Image (tube, rainbow, N blue to C red; front, top):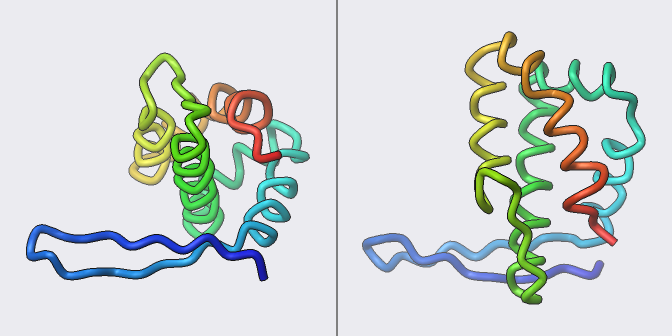
Length: 112
């Protein structure tokens, strides 16, 4: 397993350790990136799949920032995550933002 370890501290200075399995993330990323727009739109309406997409986006943005390959869409680094929250709140938002998120996911934030 090629895991990337990191540690997060909360305001009370409690540590939370976490590991990203790069190979697993790459496999899941490829699965979503190969989907048609319609399939991807439906995933944005499924809580489980939306959670996976959100985790992958956070992972990719984190890796790119650590390696100084900063990614910024027009909404800033966290604009993509913000749109995913809108999709979680409302299926109409998933329909409205699906094409933009799909394009960013497939072309702009590629996990290589």
